[in-house]
Length: 445
Image (cartoon, rainbow, N blue to C red; front, side):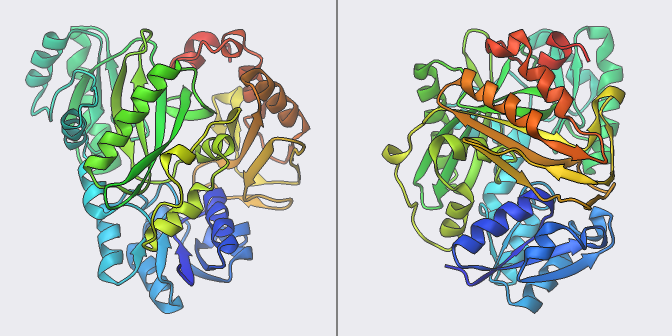
């Protein structure tokens, strides 16, 4: 096992990784921007190194400074968390070149499955169903021709994209040209790559994902499924584990995720995402080659520490358990508490937290890096906490989460807690009628 690792991230995931490392007896170095000097991960680390100014490009995306910090402190490995450099194949390669272990998949796996066109081909080769779609589109005319072939509505996506950027839904032929151009420009600005591809748009699908874990030598196991259908502008806001899939479908979708990961000889934690239609047909969407924001929901139903397993695999150990050892118990719901004002179109609400009181009691977990007096910087994602509720049944988990949110006190900034209470009290949500358009179609904001 490693003696010292560096965490190349911030916020709640940096603290989550720090705690997992500490429990394994690993020393922790945390890098930080000038805006995060007083954040909890920095205050709790064995060593901390400032790597630049608040903008991400000058700090958390500054590869040279991060690698220099790892070298100077003698860190043997780097955990990238999620976001920032976590799915950057070049960064993973540079770590290897500096004899530093990248706690994640091999660069080749990140590159192959991260490219949308390549990922579709890998899925097809692994006999994983895919939504009818194109390869890279060279022009608007080519896009029009393919749209006619598969039928409207269609969805345009950036080949190098994610997080909803460079994505447009097109319902009518006359909309296609302008939407294609707009998506291209957004993709160019966000990713430096304007390449687009197209898929058939599924009406009211569910977003279901499978947590997988590989040893890098061909052995892969899964930790069952999560439902992440409740999204706002393609960003997840609430997740559940397991999903409401029938057991027979759950087994098939999990098997397909394992097949795909095995074809890559996948190493470490990964998530295979699917769209599931009303007839429970499932289609591959993409694979995230990192730990997910919503991983605690899976940990709660399987009673397994996924981050510690990341350390073991990266250190060259075998998987600590087999598939037969992974069992689902109960139901877990995770809500993302953002510093945003739901009453004003979820406007970011940076500021100082004057008072904070987190919920407790049976089945409640809180992952957060904030504390009383903490100043939320305006430079990064607005996520300040994740509250996870576990209970024997979904109904009990909903009730427990509602109780926990009503106990929570965060004074000084607006948060999304009122919004989450609306979701939990929604009749469609309570009966499990959740689709990716849930917020637009089933809620009044």
